Length: 458
Image 1 (cartoon, one colour):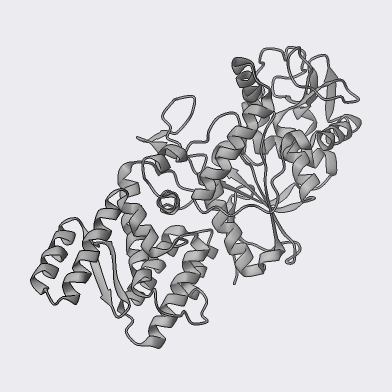
Image 2 (cartoon, rainbow, N blue to C red; image 1 turned 60 degrees about the vertical axis):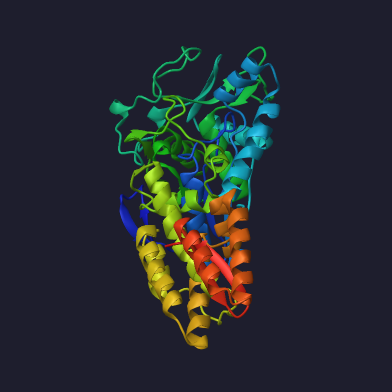
C-alpha cells in the first residue's frame, strides 16, 4: 500500500518512503499549556492521529515512533503565572491534564513519546552552543539570537523572501539584536522569571529552539514527518528548519504537513479574538467525543473547516447510522477480514478523510443489508477494521445510543422493558402503542431472539 502525502516544503503530493520502514518517525507540535485548548487546537492531534493509525497499519504497530510535545515554558505561561501568583508548573500541569483528558475523549491515541520543554533544556543549550560556534547565532545582553542573514535559504518552507519577513520585528526587550528578522534562541534571565544556567548566561529558551531540540533528543534527525497547524509554517517551522539545519548540517524533516484553520462564522478561531469553544465545553454540553472527532475529520485536513452546530448534528447522524449497523450485528462473530482496499486507499491518498467516510458509508450499507451469517461476519469485520483506522465506533453501540439521549435514556429503557413485557403477555395492542410512542421520540426498537435493543431512529 503506497501512501502519498502533501509536502509543504516541496508544495506537491509525494509518495511517502520512510528512511527506515522499521522505524518511522513523526513529530507533531503540541499545545502551549497556559490555557485550555479550543476545538481548533484539537484538529492537529485528531488529524495526525489518523495518520499515526494509518502508518501503524502499513508498517506495523511497533514500527512507528510518534512524538507530540508540551510547550511548558513560554511568555504566555509566565504572564499567566505572574497574573495568578502561582508557579508555572502549577498552571502547566493542570492544563496538560485537561488537554490529555479532552483529546482522549476524542479517541486520540497516546503518542509514543510526550516530551516537555522544561525537561529538555540541556539539549536546547547544546544546540545553541553549536549555532554560536558556527557563527549562526550571537550573544547580546538580552539573550542569544539566530542570525537569519547567515542562512541563505531561509524562507524556503513559507516561500517568504528575507525582504518580506515580519516575524522578527523588534519587540520590547530585544533592542540589541542585529536585525529585525533575527529570532531569540535564548532569553536572558529576568527577575521573577524561571531561568536555567547556560555557558552564554542564565535565562530560558525561545519557543522555536524547543521543538528542534526535542526532536533531536527524542527521535534523532532527519525525521520522516513533521506536522502541525498551518499557522505554524511561519515563523515557527521556518525557524525550526533554519536553526536545526544550521546546527546539524542536514534536513530536520523529510515531509512537512499542515492542517487548515478551524473557523467560526468564517473567521479563524482564536483565543485572542475570543471566538472559541473548547472540547471540554462541548463535552459538558452533551456532545460525544466521537461526534467532535468525526466533525473534525469531515473535511480534508488541508482545507479550512467552519465550526457550527449543523456540522455537529450531521456528524451525530452519521455516527448514529454507523452505530446502528453495529448494533444490528452485535451478536455476530466477526470474520478475519481487514479494512477494504478502497477505504485504506482513500486514507493513503494524503489522508482523504471525506473519501474514506464515503467508503465507510458503503460498508454501513453492506452491514445493514447482509443476511447470511457469512456475509454478516465479513461485513462486521470490515466495518470494525475501517472504523478503527478512522478512530470511531470505539464505544459499545448500546452505550452510544444511551449517551446520545442523555437523561431520556432511562425513560426509554423503561418503555422498552414495558414493551417486552407486553409482547410476552401477547398484549400486542399495548406493544404497538409503546412502539409508536418510542417512534415519536425518535427511537427505533430492534427485536431479536436474544431480546430487544434500541437506537436513534435514522
